[in-house]
Length: 118
Length: 107
Image 1 (cartoon, chains in turn brown, cyan):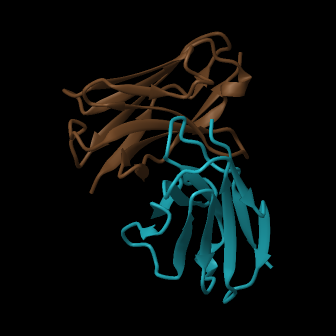
Image 2: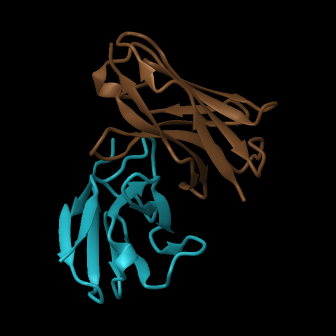
Image 3: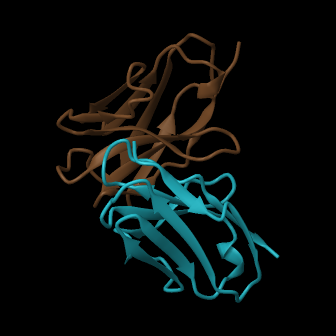
């Protein structure tokens, strides 16, 4: 059974960089059929797609975040990562990693809350 | 960006009721429409993809329909475990936008 698990700091200071990693188990991140993505959800609000990456390195980003976002992949560790620079309180959210297959996100991590505060 | 608008934003219903949630896209997205269920403190779960295809393990009381700009999610006979928030998402073009959600509550 495919599983995804987010990891990283739960607290980030304003203007600093948020960094999260998603570890994939029960399947290979190097499958050509899938993209691997990040979605976030501010407390009590809706879902926002951040971006996604293919194991080949091909990426898609939400234009609203593109200037601050980088998604990378490490096939040797079966992981992909998110960095978001110059964070503000508006970036406080639960961050989910997920697999994109058949044009849909079919497997999700449990999510990790990242709070931006000094 | 393609805007996704769900209605209603919230809905009260009773166990056994038939419920329909609608999702409208700001432009045609063919059948690139997915539905997710989210319970408090949990990750969203995929219910329906490609507008009307069931994800593995989803009960048959859930169904989806539509194409182009107008889509519906129907729960034929509400069960206690169905009270949750439901989101539509378009996967036609990046950025893959979500609707604002429909919170389904017990009457």
